[in-house]
Length: 242
Image (cartoon, rainbow, N blue to C red; front, side):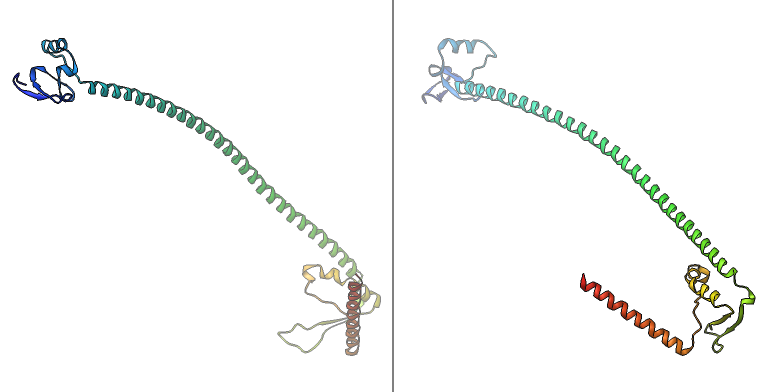
C-alpha cells in the first residue's frame, strides 16, 4: 500500500495513514499500530523481510484450531484402538467358529458312519428274518409232508373201493371227486388231519369232506347254525358280566 493512503482501523474505526497500519497476513484486515502493538514491533516488521504479523483474533483462532486438531488426533487414536480391539475380537470369534465347525463336521461324519452301520444292520436283520422264515417254513412243510406220507402210507389201492366224478360234465366247472374207502377208521383218520393237507401249497386249493346225503347235509347245516347262535349268546353273556 502507498504511504499516503488512509485505511480504517478495525478496532478503533479511525482512518489512519498506511504507515501506521498493520496488515494481518491471515485475514488481511488493517489494525492501527497503537491499537495492536508498539512502535518497536512495527519497525521490526518493516525492517525484516519475510516476517509476518497476525492479528490477535487469528492467533486465538489458530490456537483453537491447534487444540481442535489435538482433540481430533486423540479421538482418532481412541477410535483406532477400539477398532483394533474389535478386529481382535472378530479374529477370536472366527477361530471359535472354525473350531465349532470342525467339531460339527466330525460329529456329522460319525453320524453318517452310524447311519451306514444302521442301514447295513437293518439289511442283515431283514435277510436273517427271511432266512429264518424260509427255514421255518421249510421245516414245517417237511414235517407236514412226513405226516401226510405217514397218513397216506397206510392207504393202498386195495383200500380204495371206488373213485368217480360227481355232477354233470362241464368245461368251466371242476367237479368234485368221490372216493370210497373200505375202512371207516382210515377215513376218519384222514378227515381228522385235513388241516395238515391245507397247510401245504400244493394241497391248499383241495377240499376234503364227508359224502353226505341231501338230508344229512341239511341236518349238518342246522347243527352248525345252532352252534354259532349258542356261541354268540355265550360271548354276549360274558361281555355283559364283565
